[in-house]
Image (cartoon, rainbow, N blue to C red; front, side, top):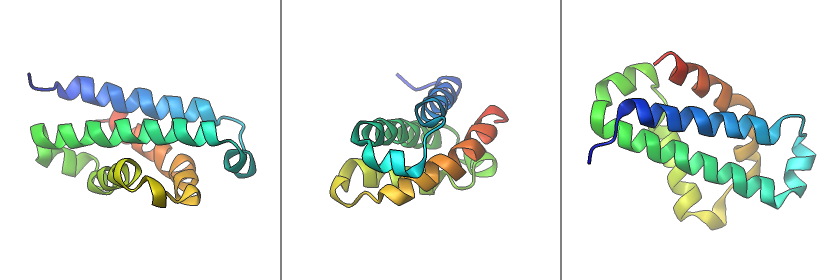
Length: 110
């Protein structure tokens, strides 16, 4: 059964919102000390990356125009899933702070 672009975009939106909720009011130092929070954030990025991977199969041209960095997000998801032992926590936090708001805006305007 093919995935609906609308459902995939909703999944991305929900995961971005979860990341924002989980990290609201948190500092980088708090994030470093909270392994459970790190794992929760990693899971949300896995969902985002997988949804983008599926969306790419349905409408690659539109996706490339609306979210040009989508391939980097998919690659980041692959690192989280397959390179679990090399996850850079600082990069993870940078994505939370700088990439998620931008991605959320692009998905909402998709």
